[in-house]
Length: 115
Length: 113
Image 1 (tube, helix red, strand yellow):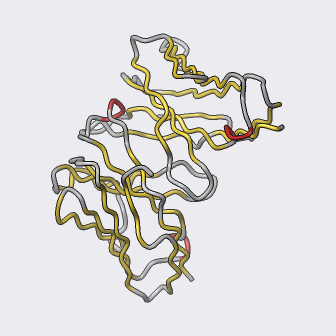
Image 2: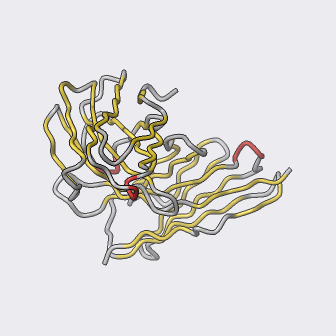
């Protein structure tokens, strides 16, 4: 295992539901990331946190709301999602936000289906 | 516009042969390039990092080359095994205040016994 855990692993929700995805890293890293991976598309960076502060919001719709209470935990709060938001949501962490010189450690992902 | 191109068609090779995967990029000047492996339904796993001043990097049966003139990286797996079957992603730095990493779509490798 990579030291990054995500729960739940699978989630089905209706468009009016509110749910949260949880990510926890046990690596002592300072940076955490949310990515979206849709079929036949590359990984899309959503949010970056460095020392609990959000440093990147990649034009993500407001129906996705991240929360980083400390350097080990990251949440993605979901509300009024659309069917096109169905995807694999991946959390990652790295020692710092040093770009491609930093190795990112990914969790197993949450497979989300929006009905 | 910036683009990372990986052969999105699956690559099928016979066990024991060398697999070569390509990552081409346009309008980037990356100082670093990474390769990751992703199995179905799992997160990517880091394999190798190569710097712009390194022509080649090796790790066990893996070899990566980085040609900044051609704007291309090649990823080789020698003596391929069925367990090497996975999708392989390249990643490099794009523009952005914090040195944002951008991933290619990946190439699916199938090693046939």
